[in-house]
Image (cartoon, rainbow, N blue to C red; front, side):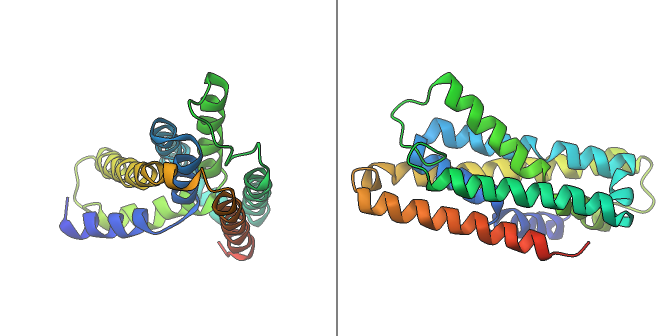
Amino acid sequence: MSLEFLFTTFIVVASPGTGAIYTIATGLARGSKASLLAAFACTLGIIPHLLAAMLGLAALLHTSALLYDAVKYAGVAYLLYMAWQTLKADGALKVEGTPTARSALRVLADGIALNILNPKLTIFFVAFLPQFTSRDAANPLAEMLGLSGVFMGMTFVVFALYGLFAAAMRDHVITRPAIMAWLRRSFAAAFVALGAKLAVSER
């Protein structure tokens, strides 16, 4: 495993995106435990893309405009749904002292869904990982799994740090209604922007 792979992976993971924004929002609204759950959920959402890449489904997704668009617009719709939920006082940014089992399940489900409904992540695995796989490797699939494990591990660690930092700032913002209203609008706008970016993206 090269330092180039680790550095490139860190840049990709640390760049603000859907998962990072969701984890930060969860940390602000529901605290550190929920932020770790959100980071874990976003990491789990990578697994279907990894399996798709290994099974060759990514190639089908890449070549089939209809299939790609179907997944893409499902992702766009979910991002817009998340934007709407974020704006609502009792939605994704609802401030909770101790999240209930039901809200914890919702954090997990939303985090997984946000990453599953992103076709670019599947294609990313096809375009990114092979560049760091040895051509003369005895078992290229095993090597790909190892690299994917590192990618997922770094995803969890970076997102968890984002979420824990947000949770640490939680007490400074939840007592200020004006700040919470501004945060709701900001996160909702971020989800809309990510949805728009996905909608106009090409395969």
